[in-house]
Image (tube, rainbow, N blue to C red):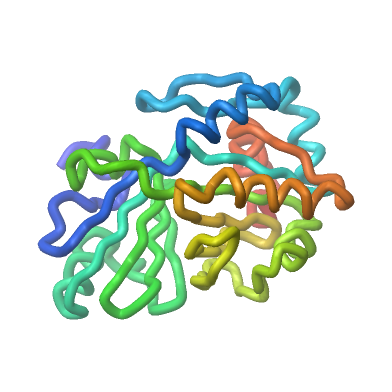
Amino acid sequence: MGRRERAHPRVASPPMAVTHGQLASPALVDHLRKAGGVMVMRDGHAVAAHFGSTATEVAVCVKRVGLAVRSDLAVLDVTGAEPRLASFLADGLGQAVPSQGRARRIAGTWCCRVASDRVVVVGPWSAIAGVAGDHPDSKTVLTLAGPRVGQVLADVGLQNDLDVEGIREGWFAESPTLLLRESAHRYLLVVDAEQAGEAWREVLDAGRSLGLSMVGTEALERLAAAPAAGIF
């Protein structure tokens, strides 16, 4: 296997049921453009790189809280009998297989063990897109980052008392959700694409009094590369 193939956990051709979907609905991408998002193409998908100033958006995340729509990501929902699923995960992740209720990140791809017989994989399109063929859009991921993120989540009714790499399924904006705590001040929220606009608006409304602002992927990448990456 060449270097490029080893760059991401191997998720190709699992002998189980797989649901695959784009994470940002076209309607929500249009909202991002109208909100001032400067869009770039990544792996064939429109992504909000920034909303005018990456430096300002980094400061928002450091001091308050930023909200990003992650159309740069793809998702797989993999189900199967526990022994087969465990074997599949061990083959792709080695010693990094997460226990139930936990997640592990390998080369920018998260593997979330939501049940003994089910995992949700979230990562770049280049890592996992195309594994299950063409399917309708099904999910949207939002990233929230900043010291006030816990209060925003609480205000929309999401329990966020998770350890880092902890996950919890719930219900938000009339959609089943998956909440993942990536780091001390950063969470991923996965919702159904059909309800993504409503989820986005609810988070924006709840965070307005706390100084929440939209941010792009460039700010998140800069934070992840900073010395304080363990916080973000």
